[in-house]
Image (cartoon, rainbow, N blue to C red; front, side, top):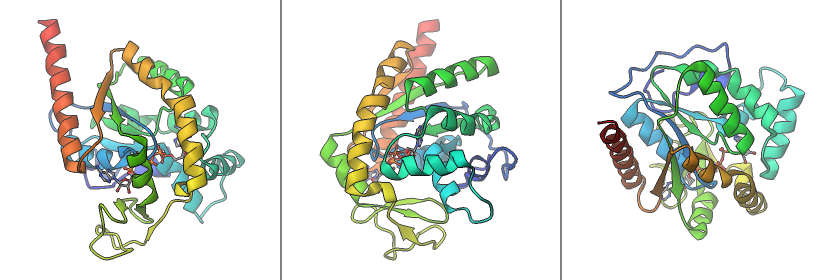
Length: 257
Ligand code: AP5
């Protein structure tokens, strides 16, 4: 896949869409899951890591939002139901999510690697991904778990602004665009996500604790978990993530020697 910023075309459009170019892995091919509470900064880090590692940013939330914005075809009943769950801040049922990921499985096999953002987020999804990757003969490099205090997370979510065209993410006070309300990359309009309203954020945090936090233990048991503090500036967090990935790889190599 292309390493152009925010080129997520095939993943967003579905199984029949073709990537504009197959990415060349810069060194190792990384297959990462980015874990962490809503608003911790997974999408922001995925964009930065994509630039550094070449792996594609695959966000299940992006796919649902793209489906909501499409005017060229009618959404399926399952997709309509999914959008209702999303608006309320609840999780989309596992079957719908897995169907959507499975039909894009070429992205998981891509030799450029991937950065999964927002998937898996239940034990059922994690197990489905594990079995699928086993059948495909591929494995995860690591699961990065971003950690941040709740008050900081709420501040990040309430100020988030997203480009309606290229999906780039900004913050009303901390990562301001050069021109208010306009995307720096493509001049698209910036908007506030519906599920960033206070009522939906509360539901999302409860759902995270109940359904997604157990994945931390799941991946620890598979020796894939890599905790990374998500405090500081995006570039600092990205550098911390890269350093943790390198240290983990060195440890693995040393343990084989
Ligand atoms: P999804 O889109 O995955 O949302 P999320 O996990 O709730 O995560 P967010 O996108 O809200 O936050 P983020 O961690 O990416 O933070 P960001 O980088 O934007 O899912 C949305 C919904 O879709 C779900 O609720 C569910 O309904 C459905 N869904 C999706 N996947 C599903 C699945 N697998 N199963 C079931 N349902 C599913 O950053 C946040 C803000 O902070 C931004 O404004 C950013 O500019 C700012 N910021 C980032 N880093 C920093 C920093 N270091 N310092 C200051 N500000 C920062």
